[in-house]
Image (cartoon, rainbow, N blue to C red; front, side):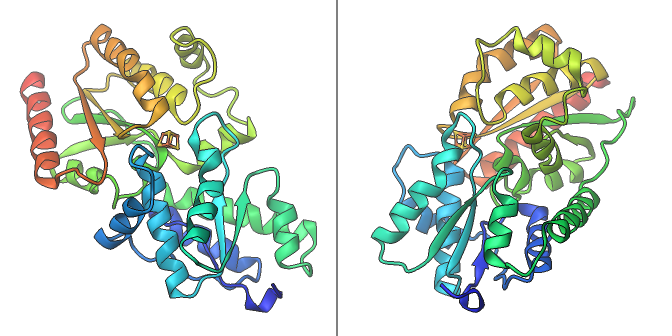
Length: 304
Ligand code: SF4
């Protein structure tokens, strides 16, 4: 496919969507902004996915179907190269979209092939330029992330843990952060894209070291996804005096399901209320809201 005819797109990912679009455009690529996730997106993804496939897969598939309909022909999907299903998403997306008769190219992206891919899409860029633009992108990404707040002694401090896409994309988590803020809570969302990148590059070695060491004792090796991160972040927040934890997990998520009993134990040992919210295409927003409101009220009374 000649370079000029390529119209790129990637699945929507919350507040990072614009940052990623800007980065790709800085490489001289034509990018179609991924549209907001709607009921239609979810229905499309669900219809063409295996029933027990994790929810983020269904949503990203629906998003891809919509962007192809809108004119994208070059899709970028992240390949985690980790232990859970995320590393296989792009292969399955490709297979399903072809079966549906769509014409497109899908490129798996990971930290090891980013320079090679950009060079392939735009051979006029030098490796130095690509590096500089990646650095600019990193700075933009850091700007959209709110700095971690301080624990408010008289306030309600709630930590959010869970699977990355569920924690980051408001259309998936029903804008849980905004809802909690409206209820007066101080939010510690432990899942940030910058941390994920640092962990993938192994540049986060020195961060939260004692908590990582403690968290390892609960496991028998690598787990994939954000399972391990959630354990050490729970221990870290417990030490900082968090008032409550919310565990957001897509139904059938392997790492998050695996850590459920461990997270229960950590919360029990530290006397921290835990609210577990499982999310999939059948969730009800009313039920979700009621549970959040009750949880915040419980913490408020407890603190009194
Ligand atoms: S972390 Fe969970 S939801 Fe995400 S890809 Fe892995 S199994 Fe699926």
